[in-house]
Each structure stands twice: as C-alpha cells, then as structure tokens.
Length: 520
Image (cartoon, rainbow, N blue to C red):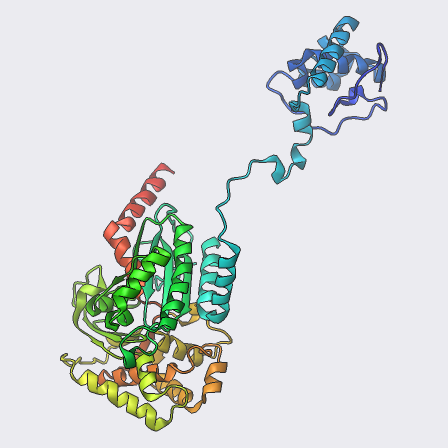
C-alpha cells in the first residue's frame, strides 16, 4: 500500500475504510465508545488513518452535512487528528516498525471488535474437563450394559433426565421437574452386593424425600452360586464380584462423594469365607463393605419404597425377593404417619430362600407345573412359622401388596408387552390379582428358550424367574390381596433415603430455595 505523502507504509490489520484506496466502507461495527474512540486512544495510528482518509475520500464541510457531523462525534475527535503534521505520521510509522521488530503480539482492540462475531470456542477459555476413565474400563462398562440391558437403559435414562434425567411421583432417583434443584456438592452413593447382583447408585437430593440419579451400575454376578451345597463362595463367583466392584470403585473415585454406604447381604452372611472375601475386596478395590443383618435389610427395602404407599393406605405387606433370601415386612399405618415408613413396621421376617437357592434345589431351566407347585409348598411352609396377626382387608382398598424385586418387575414388563424393559413404565404400576395369576401361568407355559428370548427377562434371568414366581405365589396365598404394586427399587434407594434424611439435606435445600425466592 502506498502512503500518498510518505511513500510505502505497512499494512495494518483491521484498517478503517479511510485507509483503503478503493474507498469502500469497513464492515466493522462503529458504536459508541464512551466518548473516546479506539483511534483516539492511539493518536499516532489515528493520525495515519486520518490523513490517508483525506486523500482517499475528502471530508465534506461538517456544517453542511449533519450526518457527517454525527459521524465525527461518534469517532471521538477524529477531526483533530486529520490536521496532524507529516512529522507525527513519521513518528507513528517508526513506532510501528519498532513494535514489529520487537515481536509484539498484542492484538489491537480494532481487530478484536472486527472479528468478535466470528469467534468460536477457540476464542474463549475452556474449563478443565474431568479426567475420563481409562479406555479399558469404558469397554468393560459397555460390556456390562450389553449383558444387562435393563440397568443400562436405566442409567442412560437417568443421564437424559438429568439434562432435561420431569419427576415421577414415585420419588425414584431419576427425574427432575422445573423448580427442583439438585446440589452438586451433595452426592451420595449406595452399593448393594447381593447374592445375584452387584448394584450401585450415585444420586443428588432434590425435593424432600426424593433424589436424582447421577450414575448407576448393575451386573449379575451370582455370588451365591453353589453356596447352598458347599457353604462357601466359589472362586469363580468371587472373581465375578470383584470385577464388578472394580468398576464401582472407579465410578466412586471419579466423583466427589459426600457420604456413601456399601453393604453386602445374604451370600456374605451365610458363607464361611464371607469375611475373607470382603478382606480381598478391600485389598483389590479399596471398597470396605459391611454385612448387614436381615432386619436392617427389611427396613431398607421399606425405606426405598416409602413414596409408593399412598396416604389412604392403612396396611401393607412389602416383600423383597432376593437371590439368597426374601424379606417380608408387615406395615400398619394409623392416623399419625411418621416421616419414615420403616417406623410403621410391626412384624418382619427373612426367609432363607431366594431365586438362586430355590432354582438350584428344584431346577430353574425346565420347570413343570408339578415342580413349580413343589417350590410354592416349600416357601409356604417357611411362612407358616412367621407369627403375624391376620390382616383384615376392608372394601375401601386400604390394604395391598408391594413387591420390590426382579421377579415382580419382570412380570410387569411381560404384562405390558414391552419391546424392551422401561423402568418408567414399570415402577409404580398396579397389577390386579387376576393379572398376576395370568402372567405366572404364561411364564410357566414357556420353555427356557422362550423365556430367554423375552426382552424383559433375557438369558441371565430365564432360569430364575419361575423360582421367583413361586416365592411370590406363596406370599399371595398367605396374604390375599386384590392388587399389588410394583416397585423398581430396593436397598440402594433405601440407603440413599436414610443417609439424606440423617444429614437433613432436604431441610437445608428447602431453606436454600426459600432464600433464593426471597432474594429474587
């Protein structure tokens, strides 16, 4: 570019239209600058562009052109710069050459303003991302999700609901409505290592009595496989459980957990090498699990399902059919209802039988009606020893059953004829007595391959589901009820509910919302 007065001069980035030979206007925005333009802040470069502008496009008389007058006011004193001497221009060029020789890289305000609308993410600082888990662990989790489609979908739904993960009235950690606030500094974790499954939930408290899932994991490990015959946990079963617990430990390490509780149930209670196995778990994963007693297990199952018991209900029999044991709690609610439903338990029992132990004794792959009835009679004999007063069922429907286990959720999924298991459609659903009987008869009529092909059962549960139905049938015969409510929740939800209630997070969160409303 040629300087009309001093010869060749360097090209400046973001030069104004006045410095162009073609006289075209610059496309940069020209707004208010608080009384002073960017050129006024740098008088040397301003003089350069002003004088060049005189030769490229002469300025008209300001008195005869009001628009030109306003333009000069917006530029904040450019007219004064137009009268600068050639000596000032030479000083400006010398300063510019010196700056370039020293390698100054400071971007001009003019350049930043010109390209402001074109900046992408590279123009803004990025927050430090959390370290991602190792690739090998990610592949392991993907394998878990393929082998356990139900929990994988639950976890994926939880993540979506967290971004949208609506809140169902069931109070399950999953969903969030407008107006609910989860507090990121208050993450809670619950792990349940049972006879058949290893399950983990990480959640945030939301509304009183409810929470939202942040992460979830489940894998069928069959820790109690062969336990009834040998009295010991097998090496293969322990290896499967430790591998699942490694994934749980990784998930817990990647998050800042305020409080956690990790429990083991019937398999570790019964096995003579249960304590030895838990010591191995600490050494290999860093997770210290506690073996809870059967009464605690029954209370936790009730706590996890408290939101499914309506205000009109006066009596409930809640049962949790596990892999190695089945917990049953009789709940009677008077006129004054406690905040914790577990405080209304009047009688409870834990049967030393579950889907794994019962199927191993009677066979779960090929089950005939006679074999099924034999399983029902065995469980019924155990229930006869349970000393519990009879429950009078009124016509008002103030008594019902609540089932929380894979058996009842499977029955609900088959009843709904779901193409794939969907927790949102199953949790909290009501099934009549006739519907439960019809689903049990339907499953009993299927062979092993048909059960394994059903998307709500799958090959991992195909040999266990009929043993669970036999336990359910024995409970229904002991406590006849016109309806049963299905709960897709269990010990993990009870653990989370109890920890959050003990810490008083719902009271503190309610206070925070009140303060935010007053400040708004």
